[in-house]
Structure formats: structure tokens, C-alpha cells
Image (cartoon, rainbow, N blue to C red; front, side, top):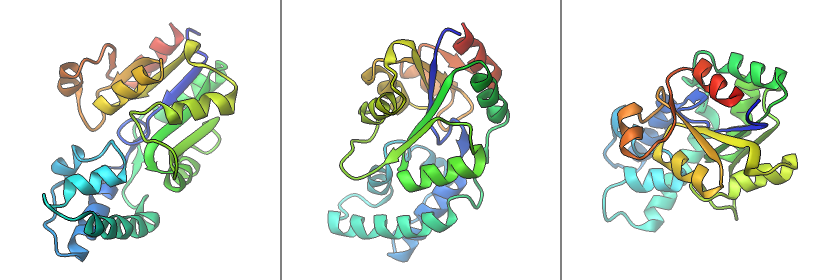
Length: 216
């Protein structure tokens, strides 16, 4: 295999979480009387963590104190409803099983809260990831390389023979900041045209294509 470690983004890459993220965002906004957003709007709000999602979703000029209240309401709701409509993308389970059978280590890094990342991995991909890292206090979110560095430390590996798989411009920057080769997937929240415009070097349309790139 060309790569010994495959590091995956979560939202838009291995799981379609957009409906639940939209529902949680609109619940939190509605609670405090703010205008709600369509799923297509929320599609471009996500990717940089919950704080940035709420910043983008709330009206311009909203105070940080009020945004903090909206974030807290979002988190309380999402802890309960993170898997109401979420589901795996077709072919991801098979991809992970083939990678592990070939001796490739697998990890997931996400700007979702760490507790949600671990719960969703257990629900949909139990036993298929060697490491899972989400947003936690004192750790910079993507595109900072911190989460990837934590994976390297946990697995005793480095970026030399690793590849990062994601679906957004944030993932492009994350891979480059962590010194990783990149694979971008077209089935996620941004799409092929957006990824091309943002400098993606390697775009795959199916999980089988991702496997072929990792295999080399």
C-alpha cells in the first residue's frame, strides 16, 4: 500500500450529518428568536467547528454573550439528536474494512465536539477506526494541525506515509498544515466545482477511487 495511515474527516466525508446539524442550528436559533436557515445555507456554515457555525448562523452584530447562549443550546440539543437523520455514505464501510484488511491504520478527525465524534463512530463504524479525535477544550480546531498531530502521537506514526481524506476547503488546509497528502471527495458538503476552485489536487468521486489512491 502507498499509505500506512488514512485520516478521515467526518461530516461530508464518512457521514452525511447535514440534516441533523441544520435541525440543531435552527432549534438553537429559534429558541432565542433568531431567523432560521435552509439546509443549503447551513451546508456552507459548517466545517470550522461549532463556534464558527453559530457565528455564521446568527445575525451580524450578535454579541459574543448571546452567541455563547446559542452555542450552549445547540450543544444540549445536538447531544441528544446527533443521529436522528445522520447516516453513512454508501461504500464507506466497505472502504474502511478493505483498508484495515490491507494493514492500513484508520483515524477520524473532526471539528465536531469530541463526545459526538466518538458516539457517531461507535454507532456507525464500531471497530473500524484506530483513533478518533474531535473538538475539545484547549485544542485548536481544523485547519490547525493539532488533531492530526494527536492522532500521530496516539498511533506512533508520522505524516510521511499518511493521507488525509476530506470534503472541504478546511480539509485541504488541514492536510497541508499537517504535512499530509490529500484526497478530496466530491460527494460531501462542497462538491467537485468548489473543491477545484479552492485548489484541490486530488478529487475522488467514489470510495473505490479513494481505495485505489491509497493503494497506489
